[in-house]
Structures are given as structure tokens and as C-alpha cells.
Amino acid sequence: MDDPDHLTPLDPAYRSMLRVQFAILAFVLLAAATVAEIAIPGWTGAVWLPVLLLATWLLIRLPMRRYAARGYSLAGERLRVVRGILFRSDTVVPFGRVQHIDVNQGPLERAFRLATLTVHTAGSHNASVSLPGLAHRDALAMREDIRAAIRRNTQ
Image 1 (cartoon, one colour):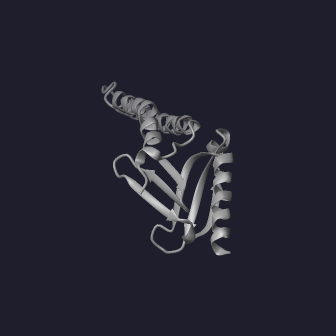
Image 2: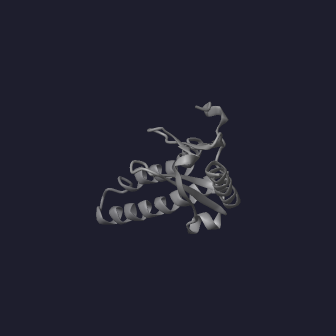
Image 3: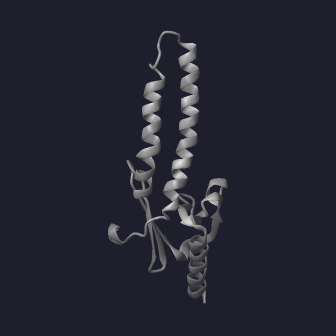
């Protein structure tokens, strides 16, 4: 296996996109905490303060940790995807097992010009591997590189 130091990091815009995702979650949590504060008279700050601390952590620390915990390597006729903060996952997909490849973009990914590369493999357990946080042009290029390697192997 490759040394973890040789992993390619995700696009830096992925951190910003994660911050926006967590900001939306934080807003919902703060709105619910505000409703709880109004519904429980005399407990001023008992719900809102812990939720505010959680929301601050969600916005500042968690996106950086999630970004740092992911990486990939595309070499030697295989794709290696490493991810996870508490539970680490190191997945290697040999190109010979690839059935098809998708490049997906949600609304936030489109706004940040990012994409998710999903490689579907033969088999039933963990039959697909997703790699979010790629620049859209890089995801398209990786898809074409994998397709070219598969064509070379089948000829």
C-alpha cells in the first residue's frame, strides 16, 4: 500500500463547502434551541448556550478535521480512497473491477465548482466508492484516466 503521506488532498474549496453545509445545520440547531428557550420560561441560556457552543465547533473545527481526514491516490491501475475521523477507511479499487464511473454535483458542489467521483465495482459488498471534494474538471479527468486504463486492459 502507498504511504499515507503520498495521498493527494481534496480541493481546498471543499473546506468552504463543508463550512456552508455546517452553517445550515447550525442555523437549524440554533432555531430549534431558540424555540426551546421560549417554550421553557426561566431557563434562559440553558438550551441556547450549549447549542451555540456546538454550532461554533461545527463551523470552525469539524470542516477542517473532515477535510484533513480525506485523501486519494490514483496510481498503478488502482484508486485508493482514505477517509474517516473516528473510524478510518482505506479503500483500494483495482481498475479491473470497475463497472462504471459517475461524476455527480449537488447544488452546493456546483456553487463551489466541485464534484463527487463515484466508482461502481463488481460485487455486492461496498460495491461503490465515492470521493467527494474534487474540482469538477479534476473529477472529469480522473474518470477519463480510469476509462482509458480500463480500455488498455481489455485490449
